[in-house]
Each structure stands twice: as C-alpha cells, then as structure tokens.
Image (cartoon, rainbow, N blue to C red; front, top):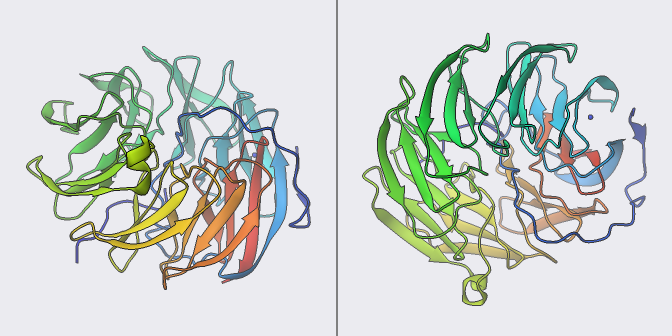
Length: 377
C-alpha cells in the first residue's frame, strides 16, 4: 500500500457547554492556509474523540483564526490570529504565553526544539522561544500565508515570494526563485525533495541542500492547498478546477478525480490527507468530504456538509478523520466511511484540527477563538 509522508500537521480558557456558540456573520470566500500536515500526532499515535464530543473550552482572540495549531515541546497548542497575536495554550485552555506581531497572522507555525517559527502579513518570519520572546526575525519579499516547514535536520523553509531556508539560529542558508505566491503547505517527497505548491497552478520540486529547481510540474489550474506526498514519490493535490489529481514521480498524471462541484466551477482548496487504509480524505468547495482510493482515485464515499470544506483532515491512529467546514461545524468521519458526529463551533472552520491528547483536539475558527473538543477515544 502507498503511504503518506508527514504528521497530523491561544485570554484564558473556560469550560463551555457544547451548545454555547457565538453568532457569526458569514464572510466572503477566502483562501485557506489551514493545511498543516495532519496524520495524527507523531504519525498517528493518538486517538481522537470517537464519541460523546463536546466543546471543552475556547480561547478568544480579537479576529478570525485561519492558522492551524502547532505543538510545542511542552505539548501546548500554538497558533496565530488575524489580530496579530501568537499564543500558546495548554490542554486545560490556559494561555501560557502571548506575543503580538504588527500585522495579521494567516500562517501556521513550525516548532523546532523550544522555537516556534511563524510568518505574518508584515512580510516577515519570526522565531519565538519557550516564553514567547523573539529570538530572531527575517524580512521576506511578500506577505507570508504558507505554513513554515521544518526539515528533519531542523532547517526551516519559508515560502513567500520565493523559498528561503533558515537555520535554527536564523541564518539564511539559500534562496530559491518561485513562480508566484504560495498559500498552501509544503511537503517532502520520499526522495527528500521539497514540494512547493505555487498558486499559479504548479508544484516546484526543490532540492533541500541548495534550493536548486529539480523540476516544475504544471497543473493548469490554481492551487490553493498543498500536496500530499506519498511514499512512492507521487503526490496528490486538489485544484481550483474541481479535480483531485495524483502526480507520479516523473511529473505525469497517474489519475484524476472530478468532484461534483467541478461542473459548477467549484474547486478543491483543501490539502488532502491519507488514512492508514489507503483512503484519501479531502474536502471541496461543493460542500462534500470525499474519500478516494490512493491507488486509482476511485470514490469510496462522499459526505455532504452545509458549506465549503477547506480544512485539512486530521487523521488519528484508528483512521478517524476530523475536519472543519464553512457550515460552522467540526465533522468526524469514522473508518467505516460514515459521519460519526458533528459539533457546532458557531463559526466557519477553515483551520486544520490538531490532536493534543487522547480524545482532545483543538481547532481555530472565524469567531476568533481556538476551540477544544473532547470526547471518549
């Protein structure tokens, strides 16, 4: 079986009943940057809430939260907000530190050792220590929307108007030219190359040692999400033309799946995720959550929701998938391909969920809060 590469890649909290939600005025369509690789935590080592889900706590910020939470060395969730704050929150919903940047934070963080590294609309990337203080900062050519990507050796890749590699200490190692802006997350192929999703409709394959362009795969449609890297060198992407495509290691199309919304020019902005049984889970602008066989792209299931789905699924160790939607809900799909439950968050959820502990996950939303949902694993 072909497998995926990668991982299930915050005032004070208080306990809230699941039914207590804020009124939300629906915003116009927005580009999701919520695609931190999300196959569980530590490769799917945790179980999510399988039954009896409820909102445990909420941590409020001043504006919407698109950022998908990262995980610090201490096991805290760390995320950014459009109010410019970056916060770290423990499993009880207590804010451990908070830091403010001069502009909006769409980006999702990477954590390396005690460092949290994240970008902002101030055309910068900043590294914060375990107390939320600035360790280093670097200027970028454009606003940063894509999540920071950490390589196994701790080197940090930052995609803005170009791709830059920084050491943990903030030293610029190399810069690679890109064919336009990047919204979605980067990925690492089975051969070690970096896969960079370029908004214009291409994936740049970059050598991690010096930033040299290995090849560029042209896809012919805008690319808002990121690639799902497979262990045989292929990758899977969702495109603005409403298709989900698997591209082989040579850059050819292995298979292409057309969503129901493609005929209405509704695209796929979410980044695909892969269950342990070889089923890809990906949301679409037509409101469907699709399950596709990784081998040939055949449809296994489609779960209907009440709005576009841009959140990347977080897959737990048992193959449960958790993802948000613009129907104000957090959805849980069981391994039998049915929707096991949905919990009202009270606002659009474009952020990708993150597992913090057994039966506990966190996710950001358009009400400006990080929400914790707990249940029985």
